[in-house]
Image (cartoon, rainbow, N blue to C red; front, top):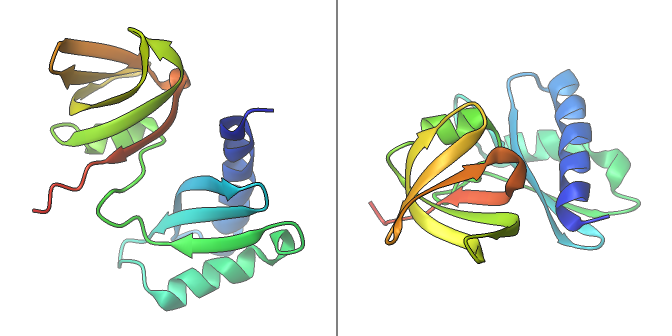
Length: 146
């Protein structure tokens, strides 16, 4: 199983747990940092603080026998995983990594110019590239220090 497949499984499981125990918290992304360690990026309408991270960690206690669990705010380089995340980020610079090569590459940085039902469009130095959501394994905003 590929790492990104395991991340997607974990994200689905964790979204269900957090949704049941803290429906006001959005699970933005789950990233495997090592074979036995993952980080959950969360968001909340009132922001993310230590108490919220602890609340989510408490909901994930069942993973502590198999994983070291970190819970974090998204920070300025907010992860993008779902179509709604990309739609909200149109007009910003993003970094995208794909599962397989597109135009001879797997990593892209550019302006997100559109987010449709099946693909996102990035403006790159060489033109615009359409990337299917299903090909994206990681994506995030690029912090431009604004």
